Image (cartoon, rainbow, N blue to C red; front, side, top):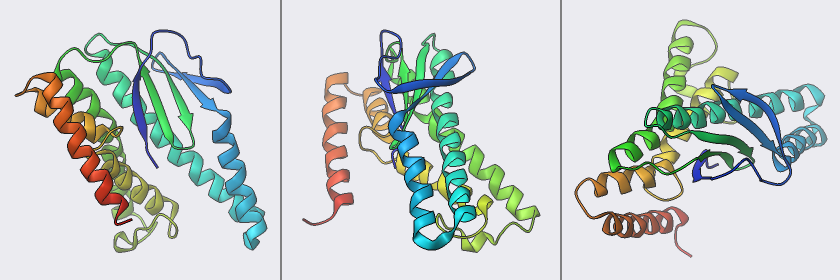
Amino acid sequence: MSSNEIVQRTGNNSMRWAWRIGRLAGVDVFVHATFLVLIGWVVLGSWFGGAGLGPALAAAGFMLLLFGCVVLHELGHALAARQFGIQTRDITLLPIGGVARLERIPESPRQELWVALAGPAVNLVIAIGLFLWMGISTSGALSELSLSSGSLTGRLLAANVSLVLFNLLPAFPTDGGRVLRALLALKLEYTRAIQIAATIGQAVSAGAAGPA
C-alpha cells in the first residue's frame, strides 16, 4: 500500500465522491467513497470467511487505525511544507493511501527534501512509541511482529515500519523518489536530477516486480 502522494493543487478539493470528515491543524481531511468500500470489503470478507462479526469488526478497526497513521503521515508533509510558506489544500484518504495536496511544490531541493522526509519521520516516531510500549507491557513479543497476526500494538508497529521502508524506496510516487531527486538536485541541474531519479526509480520498480 502506498501511503502517500504529494500533489500540487491550485483550488479546493474537486475529487469526485470525496467527503470532508474533519480538519487537522488547519487542513481539511477528506475520505473517498472507495475507501469506505475497502472497509466494507474487509468486514464482509472476514465475516463470510467464518471469522464471525467480532473479528470482522476488529479487522475493520485495525484498518481505521492504520489509515489514521496514514493521515498523520500526510499531516507531517503538510506541517513541514507550512514551515516554508507552502499551504496544504487538503488531505484525501484513498484505498491505496493518502494524498496531500500542496498549493505549490517546494522552491528548493532542501525544502523538497525536508517535506518528503517529514511523512516517513512521523511513521518512524509512531513505530518507536509502539516499540517502547511493547517493551514495557505484555502486549506481544517483539520478535513476533506481523501485519496479519499478534497483538494490535504489534501489528500497528509492523505496519508503520513497513510504511517507512516502502515510502523510502527511491521510486516515484513514493517519498523516497522525491528524496532522491532532492539530493541529486543539490549537486546537479534540476532537469538532470529528475532524469537520473526517474531512471533509478524505474530500475527499482522493475526489480521489485521481479522477472516477467
